[in-house]
Length: 71
Image (cartoon, rainbow, N blue to C red; front, top):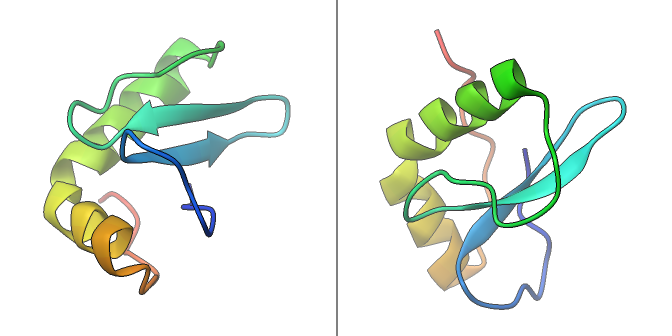
């Protein structure tokens, strides 16, 4: 999961797997468009909601940092 530099609104992250790449809203953890495997989609949503504060801060400041994986 990553934020690209010089992003556009609404605030979101990009999640990638071997075969898929999709943007997810930071506000809700929901996929913005495209398709993503159901199990991976649930994990991305859990990650976004767990680190929502940190992701929003990175979005606002453009100071990116690595976040720990889900437990």
